[in-house]
Length: 267
Length: 254
Image (cartoon, each protein chain N blue to C red):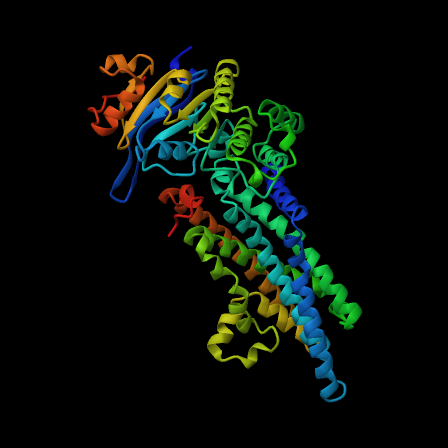
């Protein structure tokens, strides 16, 4: 892999953001709204629940982690969609740029954009609503790592879906996090779910993060090996998503869909 | 020096089909350094399919493509480092400025000394005053010039131009033709050029291939071909074979 083409992909996104405030605002606006909304919900729940019960770490902490995952995923897909929207595939893929370099560029772009969202969320949640986020200590690192890896995997997979099915399939990828959320127990333990949903949840890395987070906050036994399993799962899923993307790329090159993509003739 | 050493593009037995439709049918040809080869034919003849396969964005069913001796199927990146293209249907992103687009593609092509190279191209294509203008607000002719500047960023050994002057006014088209001819002559570059403007083809191309239904029907010097086939002009010959295709010429075109 060559660093210069990767820098080209990252620089493209920076130029787009610099020249367009409408691309910058969503990086922090939605997460800020989420934190404010859930911040007040948790305050209200604290006021009407039994003394000693604090919803801030469990609910607001979960919202923060979940939004971080969504930002990562959308960071990848939005950078990819910029090429769809500007009909740039022909220009881009008729260059020496390799698929690995292209995807790496998307991932680096996503890291940069999602860090902005994470910073805004942390600031609001800790300063305004008193979220003791750092109570999680060093466990924050693997928690964020698992969500980061899974966000990248889902973002690459979603991009492959659009590459394969065409620009009109964009609407399919936005609800993906919402479809996943019931299975990973963002706000409730996996034990709440029926057996088949629990089984699906165990295949999704974020489940281990939210189970682990609740265990730490509630002072229960935290099973490090379960979180390690979440890390392994997330890394395997990145590899799988990369494989799917490269297979889809080969398919669209073979069938001619890539060459005609710019004309929006893909069906 | 043998022919293979001077060929910057070598296409052998290239075929491509879409379901029942045969877009390119066992086509072989070469482009030499310093040569401008015109690829002519009616709409749907297979010209753009050939260009897309050379650029690696479309996989052929069979055959091989070598750019400067490098097999595109096996070493895509190394081959495409030596090529570039401009096409009317592939304008650069309109939400980026001219300079930003050139900088991004310069990085992707791994161009050394990028800043002075961009300056030179902006001057050459009279784009300096549009440097900070978003490509989307430029006229179609100006966008074509930006595309041509992009196509020359990496000093390509092989340049693919799909109707490069289609959106240009006659004066700008004349300037571009001169520049491209100079490029082929002075910079050791081979050029594959498609156009529906037969006067332009006669003026620019050293050699032409006539395509119809994915096959090469005719090949030769565009200034000599019409008289060889009883036509007054290249345009007349084009119209004739587009309506009543000749028998395909056998074997290689060189």
